[in-house]
Length: 305
Ligand code: XMP
Image (cartoon, rainbow, N blue to C red; front, side, top):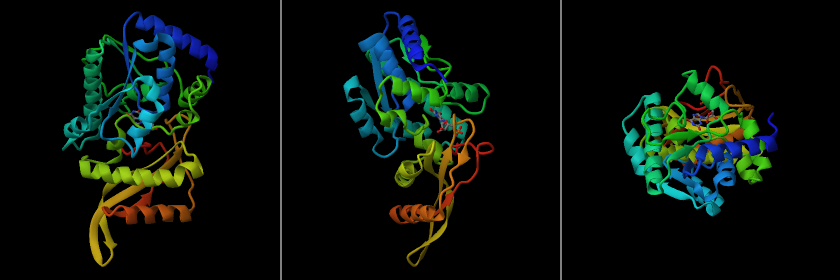
């Protein structure tokens, strides 16, 4: 475990030194990593920090409004880039290609916003497991390997690059961040796009967004898992009313983990699973069946792509 107060003073000094007299862009995602970075950087460089939130059109239900509320005092620049992201990944099936395209879009949006506010540097909440999985070629993390090779930013500052998630949460507590942020479930940079296996469309994003909302309502408070969500894994046949229908197969996943590098499925009583299946199939007409994923990581990953 880190010594949180020592880490905070060292990281603040590092950001101050790295930033010099420049302005620095940070992308807030609403997660604990970027929130901790924003709090550290505000201590270090005050209003030379340019906080940006990108609505990629791939966010969870209510996420953008919640983030505006939480970070209202941060002078947050909210960028509505939904069409830009969804158009860029239209027709793309390959998971790594999807991640790369989304990573590249993020950088282009950051660059645009940086030009507008004369910022030269980018600050990111990359943590240790992100680097390990990217360097090991396991996946293109959107804020590491998913970044394009050529960037306008002359420097990337990563103050929490050596921390594990539980250490980040501890630092968040020591910085006085709200408990809601400190304990928030991780949400991947590429958003709901990695919860649709195969091609992403506006229609299937709307379906997976609703299914995630239901899974979270049923599982977060009751089990406090490391992460829980729903994904669209394919199409199958079902019966609704008197008709056979072709609809989505939704996979619900809830896992516990220390650092996201390994994970175990949460044991959920049948009764709760039954209610989730019933709610998802009745509240979302496009869904034909619901399954619960009991695969640990490894061999499965936590997300579906
Ligand atoms: P996987 O699916 O690789 O995910 O087992 C491990 C943890 O990382 C999250 N994840 C990401 N987080 N950018 C992020 O910030 C990403 O590109 C990304 N991909 C996966 C995932 O939700 C899980 O907590």
